[in-house]
Image 1 (spheres, helix red, strand yellow):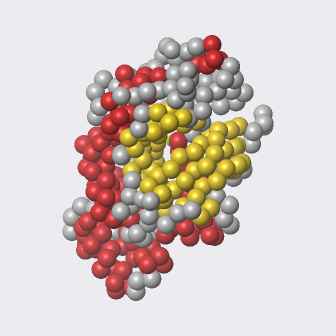
Image 2: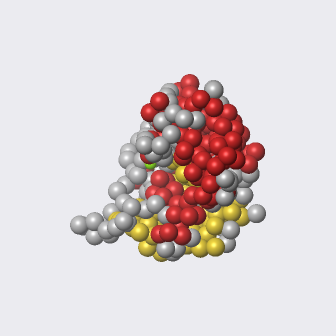
Length: 321
Ligand code: SF4
Ligand code: MG
């Protein structure tokens, strides 16, 4: 069943030089329990897409047009207190730096207990019991003792485990995880991803996993959406997109990674740079870097059309020639 729909979402930031469109009309769908990787270079619009879903676009930035729907209900136009409630209960968030999700003043136990009292209506005693279970579940040793400690008493990896427990304990249907392991040691990254994947599978929680790291996608996601310059260029099943990428940009991403799982591989090794978001040229934004660019690519913007196991926005695909 479809859980999340983005329908032609445009996210705009006013600047002194006029409005800047960071996301230029993005449509995608996510099924219940599915893990969707959202990948692209820095500035492609993937984090802003995550923020648009969670109602966390920093004003004066705004969703200029389009809709975000959760189980068919619009959530992009709700008043702040309503979206805050959805963000706690229906949508959990995990960010790169666990300290942005944790309150330094309260013990981790207080934060877990409070979340479950508010969102699940548990009483103090039941919530405390569940909190201990959650800490054990995310692999924190001696959970009963750790419950009464503050976030700064945990290592980076342990803190991110606490954040995962905190995001999942309200039993959300959807988690937005933005570079959840980027700040962690390489040895810890794989453990945290495996944990996130296992718990989301067990709880039927869907995930939008924002990352620049194709290795993370390969290990974790069911589907992958590739963004370039504020637009979707390819979406499909992970196996197809990794083994048989269709869009020339996705192909470049794959070629730029010597080996899947090599976490040092960055998505910046394709010749040239992503164009600025301001005053985009007509046609395909990737044309200046594309080895297969044709005349039409410089005049007509390709739209996503059915290809492979999903959609591709490229004049080489999807149209009857
Ligand atoms: Fe390359 Fe043209 Fe496809 Fe853009 S539309 S990726 S320029 S072939
Ligand atoms: Mg980002």
